[in-house]
Image (cartoon, rainbow, N blue to C red):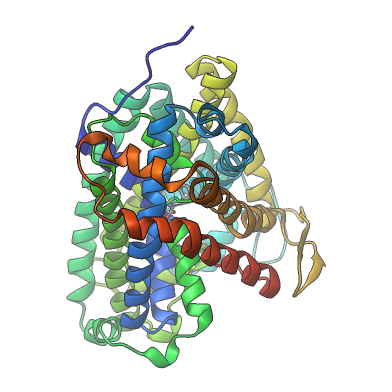
Length: 466
Ligand code: PHE
């Protein structure tokens, strides 16, 4: 039995949901550190060029595949007559599954810090490393225990996600993003004003607005590429699912531009929050990225900032909204697959999948500090290695699955299904695809080569580029 397919009820609802997927932890805790390493304004210029030249075309490609096939990521390739390419969809679904497992736990840690800053900011300031490790089940003495604090908060975080997904595309995802995304923008603006009015923040601002091309290397460009893919949620086929809920009247070209620019704007604003604040309080050499920076180093920024506790709460709330709206998009893409492919009920599929992902995520959290649970990895620089289980999960998705899925989609569209079909899908809404010629070149040559470069470099040097 064919049920009527869910659809976004409004253009703004769709844009906010897609932007909500894209705007995530990557924008807020990775981008500023990268901008600092990559020479301030010089990195921003490179990043913008990549978003325009590759991000927008790939976003448009995923959305068009979804809308043309009206199906989830795996079935979409079959419906378009190329079953042989459904492996790209499978990588998308399995990748989304693995990312959600750890992303939801990290989201739980963020939630813990929202409460932490409300109730025990002085304790965090006194020993920010100890506070973080304690959440993860380790004491300064080296003793370890079950990381129940992190796990309880991860369970709550996952529960919120499950509720949103069970409510469906329109009354769940769309409504949630319509509230969450404006709230996120307001938080961003408040934090921006706080940061740039700190005495001493001028140096950070000047740094971001200066162009230190001498800091830019080939690695910087690749790092910007990896960052752009991850940040825009490209390469997990999330946007295929989101595109499948999109009405034929919508202009995909214009919407892709808006979504990508919104995501980039948030990343840049986050840069203008973090870099000046760290310059003004701890000094430039303290700028970092990722979890330990966001949970440990930033505590000393909030400690020194007037009104630090209040702004600390707002900052972790910002991270929380960013994490929630990304995590729901990942779960939606898995649930869409399970309900369409195996005719599972939405509620049952959501509960089952969230439960399994939560449990897998427990291994991620436990492997951070509490228990020596190892994964396995291989790259040319280090040979076979046994990193923490959680790290291996991230390597698998960021270094291998995201680029592979994106590469599969480019080869499929560029060489097999043909760019003309995407162009025709975009033009369904009655508008001309303005950059069709350029698009063809990008999807056939430029994007696949760029992705191959990411894959090769991360394999050879053993570094994650997202
Ligand atoms: N784009 C999200 C971020 O910036 C992460 C993400 C990746 C979400 C892939 C969905 C799919 O954090």
